[in-house]
Length: 105
Image (tube, rainbow, N blue to C red; front, side):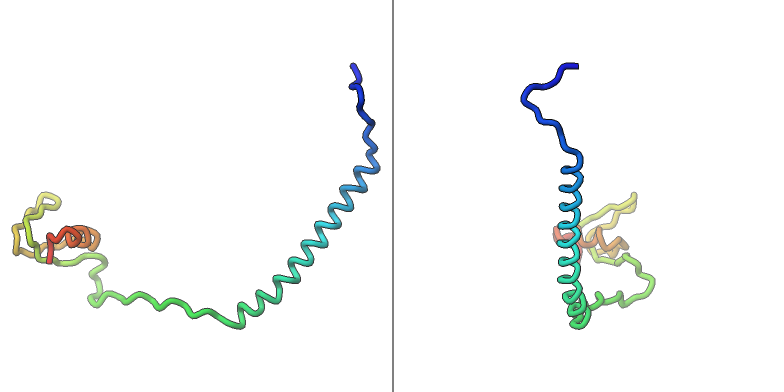
C-alpha cells in the first residue's frame, strides 16, 4: 500500500479525550436545559388555559348527519329525482354543497 504524503498519524488517545470532553459538555448543556424547562412546566400547570367550549349537539337525536331540505331546483341523487319545492333527505355535506349554490332552502 502506498502511504499518503503530508499526512500526520492520528493519535487515538487525544481523539478519545476530545470526544469525552465533548460528551461532558453536551451533558452539562442538557442538564441546564432540563432545569430551565422544569419551572416553566410547573407554572404552565398552575395556570390552566381555558378550553374551547364543546360544539352544540344536534337537537334531534338519531339524525347523525342527515337533513331534510326543501329544493329550489330539480335534484337527483342515487336515481331518485325530486322537483323544485319538494323535500329531499340528504347528508349534511350534500346540503352544504347545494346551499352554497342556492339550490336548497
